[in-house]
Structure formats: C-alpha cells, structure tokens
Image (cartoon, rainbow, N blue to C red; front, top):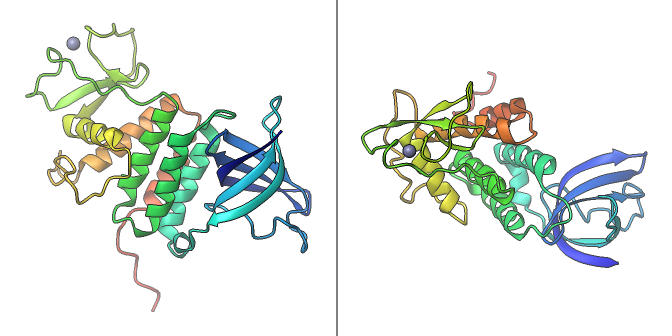
Length: 268
Ligand SMILES: [Zn+2]
C-alpha cells in the first residue's frame, strides 16, 4: 500500500557504495526506515530531495511486518537553510535527532511529536536560549512516550516552605508515602522547587516558550552560580538515563557545545 506523510530525516547512513538507509520521523506513522537505492548516483531521482532537518513530502510502500519500507518518491517542503549557518543550533538539532531516533515509536501516528520537532527545528537558528528549547523538546518527547515526570506535590509532604524536594527517578514522581511506598534502596535525588516549577511550566507549554515571557522565577538563583535551567538539565539528564535508552555522554557534550559563552578569540 502506498502511503504519504510529512517526514523529517533523523539519520542518513551509507548503505553500499551508492545507497542510503534513512530513518525518518513521520507525522502519521511514527519512526520509519527506508533504504534509498542508488541515492548517490548522479541521475538519482532522490538527489537533493532530502537531507537532515528538511521537512519532506514522503511517499512510500508501507510494510507492516518489519520497520523497513520502500521509498517511492520524496520532495522537500522546508529546507531550513538558516539552521545550517549556526553550528550551535546544528549541534542541538543533531543531539535531539539522535535522541528521537533512539526512542521514538514505530508505526504509530505521532502528530504531537512531529509538530514539536518541526517547531523546534524552525526556532533553533534564532533561539535566544538553546538550552531552554532543548529542555522543552526533551519534555515533549518524554510526554509523547508517556514517560513524563509526574510533578504532582503532596500538601502534607511538600509544604510551601520546603524548598528542596526528594524525587524518585525510578517511580518518576516526588517521594510521598501517600502516593506510593518507597522501596528499600530506591535512589532519590534532591530537586529544588523552582526546578520543578520550571519543568511544569515547560510541560504545559504546547509550543516552545519564549524565554522573555513569564518564565517562573528565572532570575532568582537557587544557590550561587546555579539557575533553574541548569538544575532542570541535571534533573532531566538523570531522568532520561533512567527511562530512555540513550547514552548520557552524548547529552553532556551537546549541552556543553550549546553553552552560550563567548567564543574564545581567534588565534592572533
Ligand atoms: Zn504525601
């Protein structure tokens, strides 16, 4: 059966001397993989029709028994050329594309995740705060997988005046005997209330948030040299390590590469 969907290439790997194996995030069928035979031949109909971070109009023969589908035709809808002029934005996009390719579900409709990914790619080149956008997308991805952290607080265990809260990554929620008994030896971590509020704000935002808008208590420091964004990055890093099959070193390098410190001055 030939089907059509908007699709964004997540990975493009060589396959034989002239062919590609392309993994896509599609709007209607989740993550899919298509071999593209002869993709690199000079007369290939697919030449220039797809690349990383393009949105494409993809037609393919759908096969239900395995994840591999035969590509029929493909045309670019959105090239996102400005993304390619900004290496930090490309580093962020590369990390997130890898995370999606490792975790997204195959053969199911994924409109929310697709919209979030397209939105993120559109905004990366102009983003004033790459880390905020990356954290927002990581939370969208977790939500689409049904794995988002439960940020509910208990009025008895987590009273307002208590700034630090204990979170259990394994159970995905704050520690509270009213909700769930803790198992012996369960690993927990300290999360500041402001980090929790920031995560909640991002989870509730259906589109990437503008950092200039009402970010909760953004300007207040939790401790010296620490802001809620850094705290949330640490928290999500641990949470992702617990729940997703993704190497944490990739995330750490991506985070460092997208740091907005002034570039060292060029060699004299
Ligand atoms: Zn409680």
